[in-house]
Length: 513
Image 1: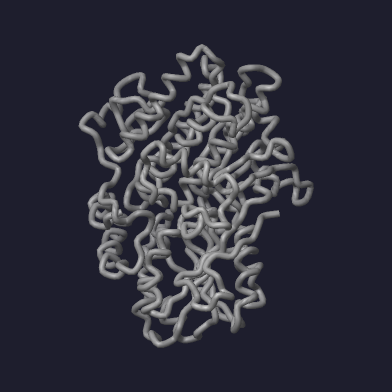
Image 2: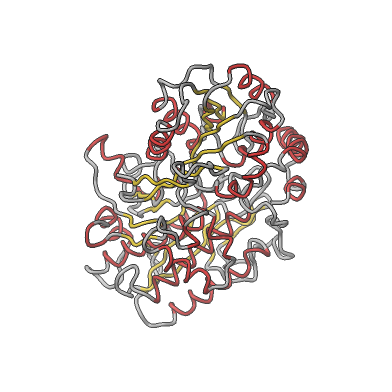
């Protein structure tokens, strides 16, 4: 996203002005890295009729300056000019299935669809996720990738606000849709790993509405805390173990330092992603962590403190020169951190940064810049932007089918490199697979039918996801909390820039167990 366009949307609060100052400062540094399609110049632009959010009956209402609620994709209101095309495609498919005369059920994609400069997701990432979800809807309604072709899937978009702050209103709307003529039977997506995500999913669970997470990987989000919840991406714990396995085979790995987002320490509403990532890194690398951890204030968190510029962090890193820097933060802040390392006082000392994430593949385009400044980035990913779109041997068996369906909708091929595109697709497809399984009992299943089948997606009923063949079943250990995590998902370990020696390939793979 264009940094200047995001600066113009910063709130007029003291915290917002501090974030604005930080954005201006980072604008000169962050030429190193561009997060999630930063060349896209638009933001969440308001339509001329946004004050009414499409009027009564649209399912949307204006709260602050955001239209939140549930829509079937039809106009006259569209969340942004950039989303108009895909919303129209969803509306067209919805109208087609409703008029088909066949059984129809509804799946909601619950996301923070409107975007501000301090959102955890960028506008391109939101667009890509909706494109992926729509592709899953089309595939489920026209092929047997999710089983039998009935009931047909109606897809609605549920916007819970740029920071998921309006989740209560939106979840209440979704709960009210379970008795509609095309009943709501599952909720996919669920935004990012925040306390709001946890509370919203728990509320849906209390009504026996199953949920399928896309990019929410925090360990706290699990079937023990949220009955009826599964996710199509590996948990933080799974990804950190994969990362540790890779790093343990690299020469010279004898010390580490932690850099973490202090928003994970907010008592009332911690950032669940950074909190669990920090905990997992501490536990998994406890024998390697030799130096005092370094904290910063992440941009998308709720801390009232001024977001940091990393200068003191990089100075301390230079003082101890660890073998690896373990980064426990969000992707939105990683660009600034790497840019700060570019200007570190120990510029002659090579630096390796290791982390995990679902939306880090844009960093692969910055290999030359990283090499110039002797920075190596190693991350455990959910997808491989280097291999999968080119049909390499490392691609999951059904990725090509997804890519073909995605491209047939004339979506940009570049959007396939965003892990969120694949995750949103797989979350909707997984919901559709559970729905078709539940339909064996009645032609038009209800939410509780699907809820009861969510952990039977295994053996004969494995989900043929774009991100891998996904299987789910009850794990008796740890109160069943790991039942939410996919079995059999490949986890690429990506190194940027690619090592010159053939024994250290850019992407190596670990499979979740």
